[in-house]
Image 1 (cartoon, rainbow, N blue to C red):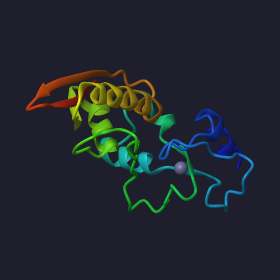
Image 2 (spheres, protein in one colour; image 1 turned 30 degrees about the vertical axis):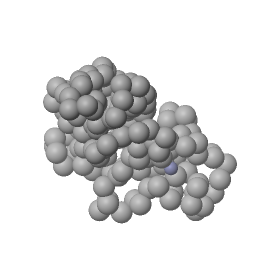
Image 3 (cartoon, protein in one colour; image 1 turned 120 degrees about the vertical axis):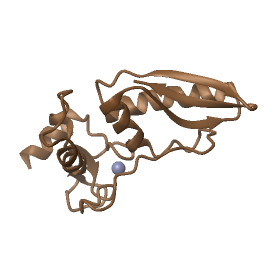
Image 4 (spheres, protein in one colour; image 1 turned 135 degrees about the horizontal axis):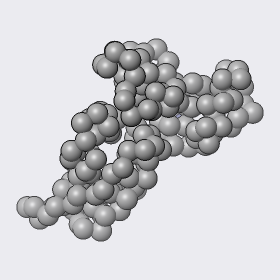
Length: 155
Ligand SMILES: [Zn+2]
């Protein structure tokens, strides 16, 4: 319980999966109550043997709503795109962020119909990913092509 408190305070009582506030006073047995999601820990540990070099090992346990955290280790965590963004062919956010964290480079996230949509989407992604992987420094890379805008981020 003390550990949950500690992780909750560090994550600002915000669910890392749905990005909504988590009520610290709710029962951990409640669907909207707080829980600790350690799936990233398991996956990173499997991949690299012993955490990663960027020092984010202590971030691998994350605060999540009980209902957002399946806690079973089988289902991959999914971060949802903001419904108000106009995006075409959005990718799965977590695997792309993992590649940026591990290798850097450039990842394409989606296409957008207008430059404004592309700018809004890049801004939202950088803000959202800033809470998923604090310390990952990203810059937007938007390219026009075929009447659409390709939204990528560079690590
Ligand atoms: Zn949640």
